[in-house]
Amino acid sequence: MAVRVARSSESFDLRKKVLRLETLYDVSRALNVLRDEQALVDEIVARAVALLDAERGFGVVFEEQSGPAVVSTVSFPTFPGSLAAASDPFVLDLCRARGPLSRTGETVLGSAAGSVVGAPLVVRDRVLGVLVALEREARGGGAAAFDDGDRRFLESVAALAAPALDALRQLRALEADVDRLREENRALKGSLGIDELLVGDSAGMRRVKELVVRAAASRVGVLIRGESGTGKELVARLLHAASPRRDGPFLALNCAAVPETLLEAELFGIERGVATGVEARQGKFELATGGTIFLDEIADAPLAIQAKLLRVLQEREIERLGGRRRIPVDVRVVAATNADLERSIREKRFREDLYYRIRVVEIPLPPLRERREDIPRLIGHFLSRIAAREGRRPKSLAREAVARLLDYPFPGNVRELENLLEGAVALVPGETIEAGDLQLRGGRTGPGSDGSLDLATLELEHIRRVLESVGGNKSEAARILGINRRTLYRKHVSN
Ligand SMILES: Nc1ncnc2c1ncn2[C@@H]1O[C@H](COP(=O)(O)OP(=O)(O)OP(=O)(O)O)[C@@H](O)[C@H]1O
Ligand SMILES: [Mg+2]
Image (tube, rainbow, N blue to C red):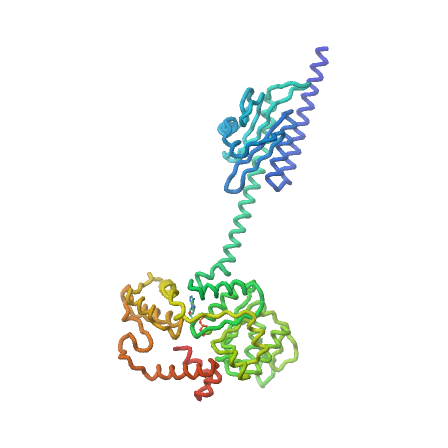
């Protein structure tokens, strides 16, 4: 009789060992496929509790930077939570011991437990969490203590689970890093860097930035309007940089600066042999495929070109000069003007249908004199940029000089401010720029000025007045002034 009992208990122990080995094997396989911490902890706690003949059990993975706490319980109707578990005396003992422990008559999580066994989840000397099983049932009923074999089994489960958990957490941290880097990249290339590049917090500039960010996502036509030097080209570039086309080309073409006869070939390209010796050449539209084309001074595009532009915008294909092939182009068009386009339409100098195509979104750039609060930040921006270019420390502006600038009307807007500062930095040998170092227009300050206007300034004033009288249309102004458009452009822009 005694022998039979011994035999049956031996075979029971053997069966138990085999079962535990199989469990360890299953656990290790499960750990390889589970990609979720919760599922992983659920799996090992459930298996451990079952194999240890325990009535209850729990697993806790503590909160860390790379992940929130994970809790899994078996037969705990009310579990106090991961924080309470982390401060439980038995759990703390496990963390300190860095190895398995079994006890009887212990209080775990506030309630008396007949017997308890636990193992910490340790990786590279770091405790990630614990596995705990409670209330061992004796064979045939009643309570029993967890033994050596139980401790070793739980230790093995923990040894398998800990590196798997660690790997999952590292993976998650890496994924978070990748997301962050992607976001930063987007920020650098796109809309989030806009505050550093387009300086100004005035209501007008905030509106501009908002419009840039919103219009960047789509391909709708954007018309940027504003006086000379207000930042139209800068905004066009930002619009491109913030758009999904940012990796494509950005090509600018000034419709006022290119002679009419060359404008068509510049835009649409030319086929070989159109005139003797002419080689085939791609136009800006073809070259800008996948990117953005910036049509500056759009009001000055001749009517014949306007008709062709409209066709490109409608059909998204071009024909080279002297060619019959239709070449598809995928280009976003951003246009800019300083002119009164509505007036040009009334005077039949600008096509209304083209106007609506290019002006789905309009971004108005306010003149600098209407947003003086932006001047101090712009000063700082340009002084540090000039200094960075020259590899020196930024010079500073005397208070009187800043006051003078805050008071100045800036007919040339931001470009004039930039030029003024460049000039002053170049002229002043010391570290501080005084009010007298600023060569403001109109003879208000600056060396050698007595308040009278010189010839060049008078000429410029006259050009400005004529331009104003024709709503900013440079072709028209050039005709009235009796000079060609390029000359006008040169005189107007370089001043
Ligand atoms: N808000 C701003 N923040 C920083 N720099 C600016 C800002 N606005 C303009 N600038 C700078 O001022 C200069 C003139 O700007 P931009 O060439 O874009 O003006 P524009 O409106 O196209 O002028 P124009 O009508 O004469 O062609 C550029 O060097 C540009 O980088
Ligand atoms: Mg410009």
